[in-house]
Image (cartoon, rainbow, N blue to C red):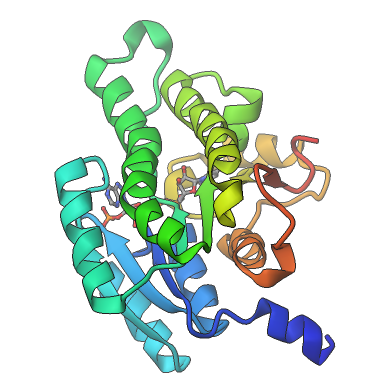
Length: 255
Ligand code: NDP
């Protein structure tokens, strides 16, 4: 890599907030952004030990960061914690809306609560975060927002009407917001992972895993690091002319 390319990838002097940064894909995103020089605010909801483990890894790089515990579904809590972080850091240039959950079930048996919490977390949570953070990005005339969608939102998955709807909604949110904020030099993109090892795909049986892999041209599940690399690229100055896009990280599962 040339010096110019590596300086375009640098996130030195930037602050990034990663929702759901305590484990899984979010942890790898937080670690990689810190590796490129960003100060990372690692958000989580319940698992403080896991979040602390992510922060310890960031500090060992050596990198810089802190923890921020709040529920992205609660707009009051979001505003309070984002404002506190802005007071501390002065500005937050990068937002990665990664936190997400799945509550699978066939439509006929899906409970109201399973529909609601999946929409609230995967879609409304991202809306709450974007609304809270974009004011400061607009003032600075700079921002990078990356939303983590899913191939479920592009292909649809049986047993996941709630999750597929939320992830497809995130694509719409991304494109509308990209148009709204482009004049302010704020770029909004989506990364859409296929089946990634660990995290919310952990409940799959070996048989289910094998049958999914059969449909992946690259012949393997993705790793959290594969997703993190795409996010870091979209947050960097290498991606200055990219907005409103959906970047599939799926081994060819959907093309
Ligand atoms: P994990 O289950 O490993 O991690 C989820 C993270 O989200 C945790 O850090 C959790 O924090 C946090 N979180 C959940 N709810 C909230 C909330 N209300 N407020 C704040 N934080 C919250 O998930 P993955 O790493 O597997 O997935 C990460 C993202 O990638 C998700 O959006 C998922 O939909 C998407 N994705 C994942 C795929 C996969 O195969 N793994 C495939 C395609 C997309 P805590 O534990 O502290 O509550």
